[in-house]
Length: 243
Image 1 (cartoon, rainbow, N blue to C red):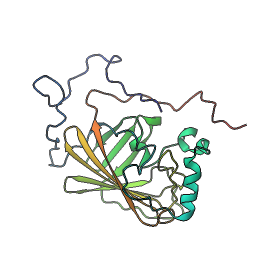
Image 2 (image 1 turned 30 degrees about the vertical axis):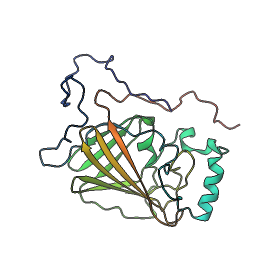
Image 3 (image 1 turned 180 degrees about the vertical axis):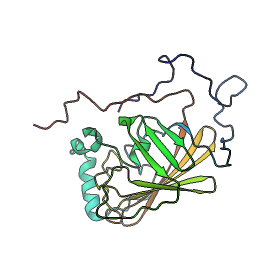
Image 4 (image 1 turned 135 degrees about the vertical axis):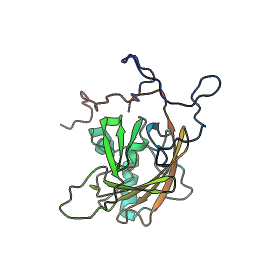
């Protein structure tokens, strides 16, 4: 995947200055206190990027084995050889799903409102939303299955807790091919610990693919002098096409 973010603003003129705290030498002070909104809630807004490595192996920091169901372990072992790379949704310009799209080497923007938090991704020009208005997801056979789930959120102190369900069972959790099913539930806890850093705790709960829930933690970093760019997925790509 190509990193498409733009560190400069060559395409714009009259760009207003941003409210970024700075060190005495004029550089962005990423260690400054996290901003807050008028209602006292943490302001998660901004363009963020996750560290490298997790999009390939979501479990790279786990101290113990991923708790696969036997069939899921067998499928994962086959996919991890690279034999079925053409089946990866990414390779077919299909959505990366959650939590994978947050970990891709492409930035994403949080747009925060009182009732909805929007996640806008440079990768494939994807977006998804988490409702903070108290609604609850109701499983129903008539619900359209999704790549990013039906997401709801709530505040736990200074942490935004986002719960996503209603997946289509086609999501690869990472590039190595950890599988998921329609029973997948992804819980993400976002905590902006200072101006430039946000902790994201991710819980994978899929009783049909794993014997118990399992957790990973990553730290995203703010990109204060960047804008998202259009990234249309491989318009002329031909290698993955089957005859």
